[in-house]
Image (tube, rainbow, N blue to C red):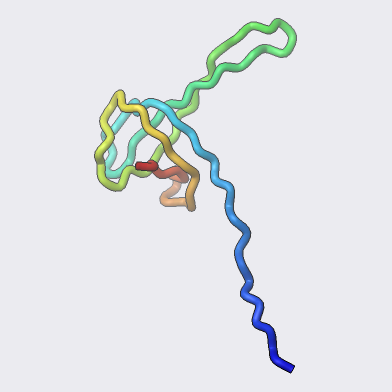
Length: 87
């Protein structure tokens, strides 16, 4: 009998992908990105905007305030950074 070696393959991780506008680039290798989303009130059906601010890792310090960037989820890079820029 020959032993069949099965490699344990890790399941593919589905990472969230967001895009927004850079509101601050003061940190070293860190930018703050604002992501706006439109929600609808369940009862009154009024639309309103909800914004979230994410601290995003920018390895090259290439993005400036006002730029539109896309970023994905990643492993924790610091206490507050869990996102990195996609180029």
